[in-house]
Image 1 (cartoon, rainbow, N blue to C red):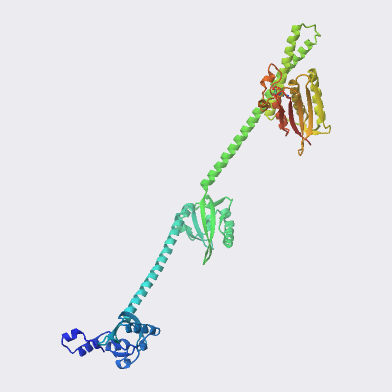
Image 2 (cartoon, rainbow, N blue to C red):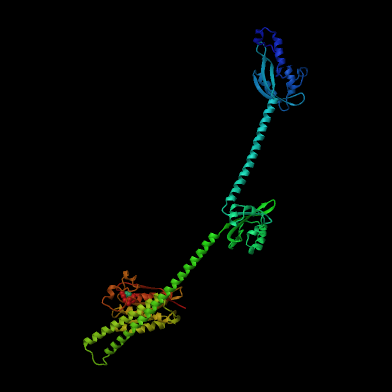
Length: 537
Ligand code: ADP
């Protein structure tokens, strides 16, 4: 099989050929020789054991015969490498046993050279590793199986844990939780359900859920339950209704219930979360009571305020009446005295009498204004709006003021469209006009002019009435204040004891409660224009 003779063989002085043949024959491994083109040249007993063929059957056959289908290419590859002088160790490949079964071998190949070093053949040792391989595969397989199995076990455990966690959640939920089967039997109840209904869990499980509903609503509940299971939607139960649950001892407890259907193989089960809302209901009732008490208190205060206001108005009305009566007497008698029908007065007496008369008139005006203003502020002014021909109202006011104006040498004019009507309280309109006109007379020197104009406001159902004078005017810094109560412009009223500082404040109120506006245009020394608007019908 080989020309090479190991030195050790010669060293021990044995017949090298036989010694070698003995080793080859006794080897468990297949030891064979091949030509460079893959023809088997020698075949030991090990090869027969491993591949099933006898030496006679194998020698002379191409090595490809023994290849497992699909492995032929690897034989060619090996032959190529060996022809190039390469050694190949522990090359795993599959061969076919004579019986057709698979033989897995680990090959070690080395080229055989002649004395000149030329490669002339191949020496091959093939070790059967089928069992080892199969054992290893079986082991890997079983390891894999074990791993898969344990994965499944882990999965089952995770399921179990989830289930346990879920049960734990339900068990410790603050709300009572019940699950009811299609027949209305309780199949799950948590500890909150035990304390809410005061039944033990054993008592709850298997009982009809209808027994947990007050008798009065039991029949309706059973109907609702069936309808809900049929509809199969999650919803709060009896929204906006006052629901009650019945305890074991027959007492009732206010609850709020939310339901959800659970599809099972046995039909739709219903899970109910039931919350005891006694505390909340009590708080709500308390809040309602407080609210009611608060509203009552508010109403009582409002009525008291109204009563006090009425009292104030009544007091003012009566006091002004009490004040006006003696004032009228004073004014009347001072006028009588001034007529000198009871005898002539000397210069001084006449002067004293004029003082009495003028101050009494002033006091009367003051009392009237205060009464008016307090009535308006108390909301106690009753208006009687009517459709009025504006022209008439203005002429009347101008005519009433004319004497005092003309006494000062002031001309009085009224220019307006005779057809304009307003919707206003006649008495109060007259009061506004009097106030503005008498102010105009008061603050306009001799030879001045006072005029009243009225023009419809474009795009508005209202009319603008303007009282203009050519008087002393009002400085800018004063203009913003003159509609305030008791405001009088210092310089203009110096030494003038007429007026109360209430006239314009009253005008403003009277205009505004009739839905109009009032404002002034003026320059110091240039006269003033007081404008106000009123609604037209
Ligand atoms: P009074 O009773 O003092 O007239 P008003 O409220 O009617 O009170 O007027 C407030 C102040 O506005 C007056 O004191 C005066 O200083 C000023 N005022 C009112 N009308 C005119 C006017 N036409 N021209 C100049 N000043 C005026």
